[in-house]
Image (cartoon, helix red, strand yellow):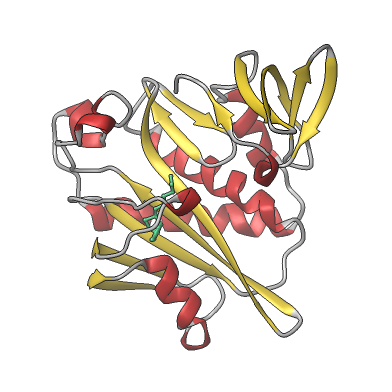
Length: 235
Ligand code: BTN
């Protein structure tokens, strides 16, 4: 297991999806800058001086979609050494004081009868200037703590923690789910959910053992998978 470092790359996720044959299970790619950084829902991910990393999962794992909660828990634990108001926004964001500090993009690729997964994440580390539309929504370690961070050191910390968490994950240890529940910014909150084309209020009740979210919509308990819904709220 190793970290490969690139100065500039199109996207660490795209690169690992295209070059998976050259890498082993759980190898990782870290870039200083991306020219085609990708976010969820076709958005772009713009970086300044941040942590841009992808981990390749080549081995066959059960419940792949739960890897998003696993990496949330890993990153939450590491960032908690530096920040004390972090929350996890199911299923793939980490917020500090309600502002996004980390986004996660899981991508799968099917090769024959196997599916590989690339776990990509961007952590705002030394960025201090955000576009107007992001200024109230995003933050960075430097903005919060007023000091520069060594990105490679942080990346190593996260990678080590992930390798240990992943090993527990494959042994069916589900303590990462508890980390996601205990530090969720959504449980107990009311969010807007699109339900059959209609935007409705939904109270978030829980994150279930299968990684799904349990919502109360129109008095009924409804379970949703991450891919099925988009949550609208103030975070
Ligand atoms: C999101 O919140 O929309 C997810 C952002 C994920 C960004 C990371 S940066 C490293 C990896 N490579 C990419 O192109 N995207 C992910």
